[in-house]
Length: 51
View 1 (tube, helix red, strand yellow):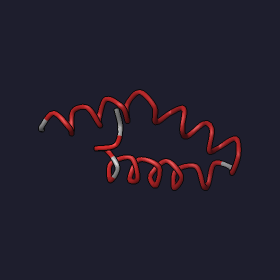
View 2 (tube, one colour):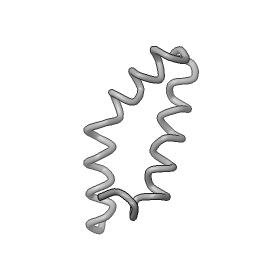
View 3 (tube, rainbow, N blue to C red):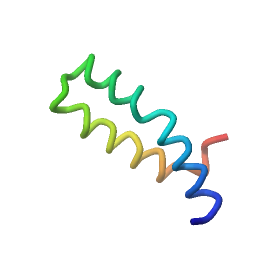
View 4 (cartoon, helix red, strand yellow):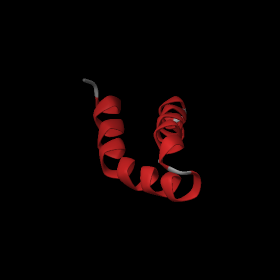
């Protein structure tokens, strides 16, 4: 695992539950998993833009 992957994993691990809880509160539990997946897929694609 390279540095970018380790950094992304740390961000994912620290934020996933909060993103899921937010999505669940707004859209319901059935959609929350999809929202989390899409959120972190976008974050990975744009990882170079994260300070």
